[in-house]
Length: 348
Image (tube, rainbow, N blue to C red):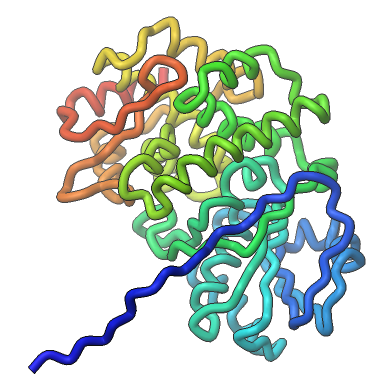
């Protein structure tokens, strides 16, 4: 006997990303703003003044990557219960990538799913983390190993939130801009080589182009079964750096930048990119204060950490590597000695 449950259906998760001055948001349901103590002290009152809703509550957590874990998820969920949110309620992720990732994950699992929107307050979240639907948390084994794909209903990017952003955090976001340009858009990369992101017009143009590039990839490969893995240039190594150094020692974008250097060394060894082009990418990073190199105390142990990356399949690591400037390759089956050599050279 066979009993079929036919769930063949089409779900449209399309949404808009708005870039510009955030004036007012009006909702006909309960709203909970999820943010951290730092952002709450700086901007929560302003955001609340821009929201019209029957009820507005907050879930305020500690600031920092070290708090991106299941314990914090539990605290957020408890707060949502305290606020008596129901399935028609809305969550607002108000913060950087950590807040966005955790809010999206909570939205996926609270009462089996509620809606959420993103209002990013860091450059990194504006150009990368707030769009694309990746959500989740870290655990003792690695970065973002627990999570779900959950697309927001909308993303609202307003650069006024960046006025209080520390320079180091701003530079961390610039790493993601360079990452996308270096592997997806040569012309954009060439503009970045002389861009002044302190200029509002140039900054907005860079944010918009980064989002266009990411949106194109996400529309082609929402759940990272192929092309979307290109966005992981620098991340496979970078996530291992975060794990080995202890979450919080470096910012995410700093780890991505250091991971890009390792990826460049591997791409050079595989003759995917010439040394001069790799140097151009590294100079672009240096322009935005990302000149650090990561020297692991144990290349063999660092290599083992790479296997906890989510792109690993059948115990094989897939690396997103630059192919010249403006192109990329997804490469597996790379000899261990080449990878370890890239790890060591990336710290020099």
